[in-house]
Picture 1 (cartoon, one colour):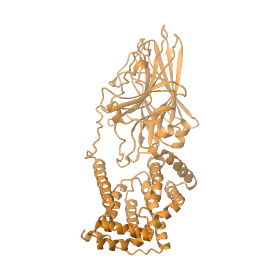
Picture 2 (cartoon, rainbow, N blue to C red):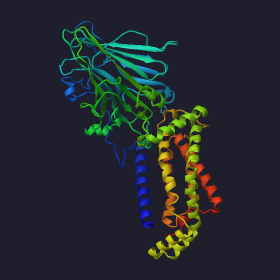
Picture 3 (cartoon, rainbow, N blue to C red):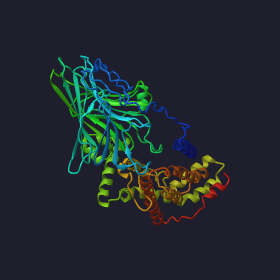
Picture 4 (cartoon, rainbow, N blue to C red):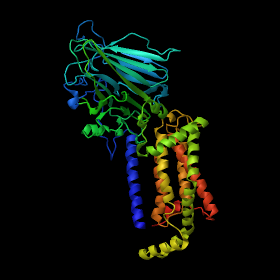
Length: 577
């Protein structure tokens, strides 16, 4: 049994070292040694759109133009004649957003979040949607042909920006930005964005005007395009998801890896009458939503002409529009922080873009409790401390059983050690004698494990709550901790974390096997390396948990009369095996 346990420990330790080294390489800007990413670099960041390939029978003969687009400033002559529309940028500012629209397609090409500072660039705000030289991330819409065919305005069509107010003034709660396309195939598309004070979602109206002589039945597409790179400064230690997501009433939240799209293996529900499509990253997300009951086809594809450029979107057919008639489709575009309460109020299931993984069922109530504590305490750092205290109190009796078992193990350790020394050349007899001692002393060697194993999912769920909550960004705690979502700038918390972990090891019973005893001291030191790169809020959570565990373990040891004789762990490494 000891040999098996020893092997398992060495395998875990070895694999952990591989992961740590691999992530250390990535953290320092080098290529991963053992798990290299297959993601390619963006070949042309300044490109203006992703292609929407034909999507089966529903797409008819229509297709969205390829990624290659018109150059800024080049005029596009309307199909019906008249003055050419000149491509321009329109910047709109509210109290929480600064949005940049491109009149080519009336697309949203940049969104600056005015209430969220960029931790990598002090004095600047977070930029979510972007079309800089390093990133490409845009929201686009347009029309393609239905079964009857035809050519219509797309996100490559240069539109005219209707003059209007561009800054949300005091006393005004809404701001309207409108773009009108030239007539193409007798059809004009009027796209209207309505942004509101204090909100990150905007109503987007698409009015399809048929000025032709025959009825038309185009399809409206709404898509988000993005390069496949992680957000700037995102630590590989966090293992957070970046990529498309689709939510439907039937299959709920479905994450899609960029690599699966690349390989043609992406699986998600194609047809739906509800839900949304989104691009998700750590702390922030964007999403297109159609009204409930609006039938549409979901898609997630790679741009066939550009490396590392992906699209996720919806395609909804419009009923036949008679000559001289207009059909309007309402939609919603969200681009902002993953504030759970805000997302819940916007649409069913939208809060799931805040990814808790497979422990969502535990994480959501933990976030609710953390949020409730913050409403009283008004400090996220102390709210974390209070939440861990409540959890430790809830699990007090389980922990008590575990620590009592450990205390009994500690009491018999000298007897086990002496027996192992006496029977070191008789392994079978040693095993039998060890089991006899355990039975005689009524000690269960696994008794300290099971109560702790029950609690592990809860504390892992809490880990994801703290890692995923945008509220931690730029949230101060005390003194030198000004951002709970950033690593401790002076590494004080990680050092305290390491010391408390070692103190826990010292309080635990020393394994009779010298090799296992050494591993018990090496592994906390090895795993502590990660905490130097973890957000301060996460490290604070672990420190609080460790301190409370140490206090409870010391109390139980004293109550059971198990005296701890201080030992020098270095002695374990000085002795010969």
